[in-house]
Image (cartoon, rainbow, N blue to C red; front, side, top):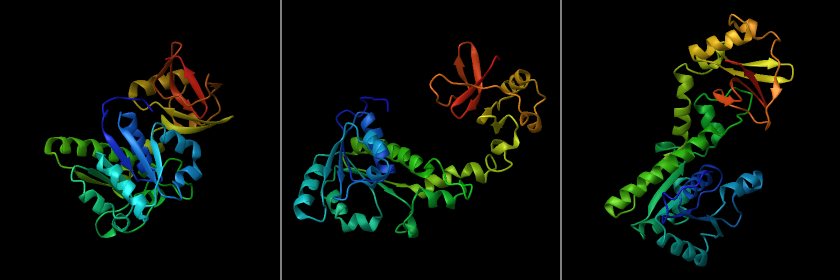
Length: 288
């Protein structure tokens, strides 16, 4: 994650576990904030299921284990929050109250609070995870499991935006500001691409355009992303086809591995060629 000093001097205390909160905290740390991560005695579940990602997200942070139900540990948390500019949480509202975090916030009027929740309104206490948020808003293709936690990732970025807003408001008013980030709403916005017919089966970015599809190859699959008319024209010329899906499904492309084995993206310049075909671990290079 690229580093910046924009938030130098800002103190953040994160009590958020799992994925959206740690992602947001890592981004704030990358922007220059000092982050203290408070974990429960059981630790952050993310560490158990994805230890390398956990390590990556907590680089440069001070990690403290505290039991907020214990008076002594609660006093330590209170001291941490008294010195902080921003508190980041990710739990249901009732859990926030049960742990006394609402009281700790009230005792520190300068403290801003970014509250990540799954749902809002009358459903605020309803539990959920990225999978159920995506299922609710049409971003899944059952029975295939998602490969990217879309709601969690979008929610994390929204939490960062909310944090920057809160810090700006607090700087102007002298009083901490509170923002709620709702993961289900993030999934709803992601699902707009499906609701409005841009993506999904038969949609323009869902395979209807032959220049924007995934095709089988002799050694896996190739993603063709030549959507713009001038790229599509050059791709057809380079492949020697009129441009129908049936033509492109015929075996005709020789691919070679990329130098680093990673997926390239569709406008990468490489040794005088433009890569408009993206493979999973391979890139087909066309002279355009």
